[in-house]
Image 1 (spheres, rainbow over the protein chains, first blue to last red):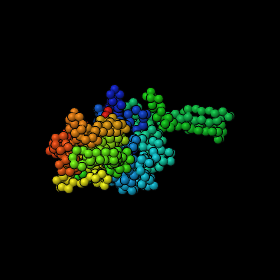
Image 2: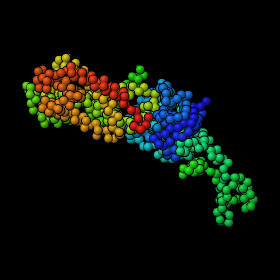
Image 3: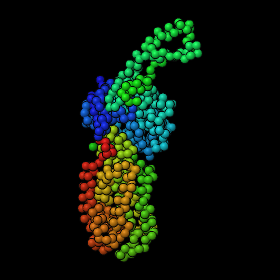
Image 4: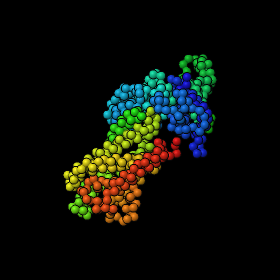
Length: 281
Length: 266
């Protein structure tokens, strides 16, 4: 059962083809990360799925409905965390979360949600006075207050410090554990690797790769780089069989290999090389 | 329908909190008539307007109450809505299971409540410091209520419609405030209406404010004061017609032009 199905999606603005034949699906309960440079078509694609924009061509099914025509009952089943909200500045965190809970038939408990996003200490603060990271957590609180089956997260941790980001990841993992389907767009590859079951790399309006973080772009079978020191000289060798190479190296050097490192391509290496193949970087 | 009203009711509370907590909006839309009343009331306190001992400060209070309608509805919404289009308020609401009508219920409820609060303060100041007497007949109070309701309704709808004109929230007040100011100058708020050139009087007669100030003078000036009006009559029937026409027109225009997102998006 798929929560999202996108087939051959097209969308142009004036003379720019923002989305140029995108197809993918997100299974129920899955977290899919959309990766790609600015202007690649991530936000346009997401906003079509959220019903904010209309596609020129292609078919879209979100929770079984077409976002163009879906009604308020459908809206109640999805949660949206937009990219940069500055609204509600004169209200407090508590007022905002309680207010929007009333839009749903079966909302989460507002106080529990405030606690879940770690804003208990700030519950009485005006939203306009929150730090960037606190503000994003408020947006997430408002995105999940209605107990959504499907949650859209658009660059949720931009501007977070590393500790806040890790706390945020724990929150999202709890939502995943509760069965929430998540479509995440992000610039942070460590975030995608940690949270996503699959990642889709989008470049110039097209999906150039889509797989698990471990498998994408032949990452699992790509050549590894083994580096070590021999007689005080640093050496490196790329190999598709690093285990055999290290064994022969150990035999040759007779024991511990000085400064041994086996470097597998990270998700970032793979992502950058995928984009380089597309002529993006 | 009941959901639209239930959520709309909650939005009224939310809108009022935002209206009064935002210093700019509270000052510009709510406090301004009080400030102007104090200034004009003091400067032209004893200037006669041509009927018995009615003073300009009494004449001006009627104009300020009518202006209060324009401030809390038209000026307020024509500035606030473009800002909400910019700061993603409207985008958030579109993404929620909220009937669209609830947004307008919230706006209208805020406008009516803010106006009532404003009138109470204006009347207290007028009675205590500027020798204004409150109307003593039920007919005048009834007129006060229907003129206020029809005025608020038409100017709320016109404010919603006009919210598509400013391209950005930031510059909205620079577009809206001069329009309000020009209407006030030409409609007999700052000057005695009959002393204005006739082309100016004719211009002002197209818009609601002239009719609102005239009807408010009927409510707050003594019996017989209609001799100072251009036609020697209060013309309440004509006032109802003009406001009614703007209400219907404003509704149709708002329905046709209102946008949830900025131009260039769909």
